[in-house]
Length: 290
Length: 287
Image (spheres, rainbow over the protein chains, first blue to last red):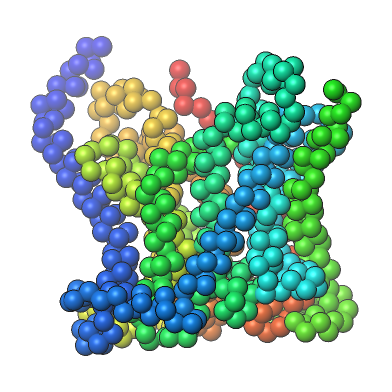
């Protein structure tokens, strides 16, 4: 005890100086992180608002004067522009989101709360499929959906994902197991069927994890690229990532246009992320606690 | 009531069971089958046995892409974990203004790797790219064979650091402050605290991140596609790029499937090792 207080004294003496120094270093790290993170976004957005003539004369670091919307207007008005890809992407994400949520909630509830033969074995099969990455199945999926005559259709974009996700089922099951059985029994005695139970008890009680999963699903499929690129061709069912990639290879040196494209592709999720930052931070906790 | 339950259970899982069977299990089986054939995009096929595997090994394509993927992983995972940890230790101090930085650093993680790849391709562009303009040099970042892979790894690190720091922040806030109080009383400086206390105490988080990041980096595709497409001279052709280029570039679906099978087996091995190690978890309750 006395040894502790003796050692403490010199530290307390220099505390103000240490604190300023410590904070200075912290702010330096935070500033560097913010600048390095935002820099590329800033460059690309600036270039998107620069006129092609100014870009050609002054290069990528010039501040747009005056800022022009030419690139965005060009992207949104031309026939092979971004209007169709945005519409296709929104539809694709919406259909996958609704399907995955509904079917994952149903399956997770069955795995968590019901008894039926083969339940545990099947659950392990679902867990095992978490190891299967998209790139391993992309060639067989391509062959299967081509065989079904679905190449370059909207169905090909959504079908492999719409029937539920093992990851979502896994996370939901963990949460559904914690629902007090007295609550479930009370509702069952009142004559509630499975669907009413889900709608009025299970889903409302687990809103946080469901919001988390909605966010993960939207981000994953808004950003998905390989499968849509492989299974669609031409502008009809082009999603926004494929359109961005096509824009880049088609207008290789028209960087003002290409940067307007990347801005449009990324902006919706950046806005979503800023709005739902708390849920995203929490989703990290969910992932580590498994 | 109980007699109805088995049927209800099966009905509820039916849609997802169809999905898992048709779009995850069946394709894996099919990948094994296709890998035994010469199979092109236009439907012609011929049984080859293991010839695809033999040719992949003998012409060096597989070894090259495994090596590229391994180097990419060995650069990007340790560096992004180290930077993510340092960033997290500064963010959890919760100084005024750090809440904004916490949001900013996660922004790249929600953006499409494909779109970020396009942005960085432009930044790396030799003549009009922002990076060379700032540095006042004319370096061929993405077309120089010795620079391309480090450049790709750099972009991956840049995208993931903020997301990784979120996990470390969560881990750091679970460490009781009293431990640091005791260390400070015993005269441990910030560097000693980091090395002797924070890093060991964060081992579960670090391990979780290392495993998930290694698995993710073995699957990286979009960003490489946008930045280099696998070039120059296959120097950035990661496993996923090789699968894509073989299948949809060279119309060799059999060879592509053989690579996919090997990737799948590799990921199974990594996951099994992870499961073995995860049982050894430490607690924060030091008493």
